[in-house]
Image 1 (cartoon, one colour):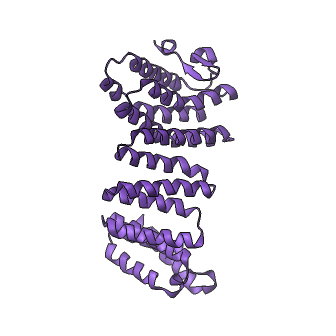
Image 2: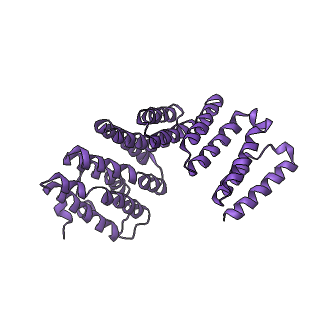
Length: 315
């Protein structure tokens, strides 16, 4: 596969070189470098990258320098050279800021934050993670924000800022919930729902390990399914028998949480069930089988909140 990628990249570069008006094929050059690294040709890739960076056309283009330095950072990181990766990515970020690439800036800031986290510089990692969410919001890239907030919250957990992390997760979940509600297709909703599985899982894990608040944990569990259930009831979509099994499992989780005498037991039932629930439940909305499920069969009550009674689902 990488051999083919290298061949196609070389072919694209050759075609571009034969047609100067087409401009330099920066994407093909990046693909070539990535393929070389995957094939184990790391030193050759570094030499090729140095030549690309030294090209007069590249030196005159902040866009190209941003892209090439980003690729250099990926190569350095793949080789475990974190200081070099930080240096290259800092350059990529600097050139992106010069040209005002509002889409790349938050991504670079977030990646740089993760590199600083690996070095143990958590204060710098948190500062960059905050900047990445601010940049995404300023640029109007709202779909990026929950993912970036998830990264910020994980850094806050590493710094033992558990209250801050909890609030960050809450903010991420709220934004994600709004996007799911505004999605205009079942496919769009499913993609968004499946995309937040890790977010809810980590939030639930935070509360289980450091919060000691089963009530808050219940709200996280219900938030993971509340959006789907509300949309399902309002749209009249069908669902599968598999999703009913999922609902029973969730009800058992709620019942077990409510009966736990010790918080250690509460922590033991946290993350994996939520992650699998979100994935399975999202898939069932899109791929549902015939047989409409009524509100009574769900054991749901819709008023100001969405709640589930565990006993309704127990065999």
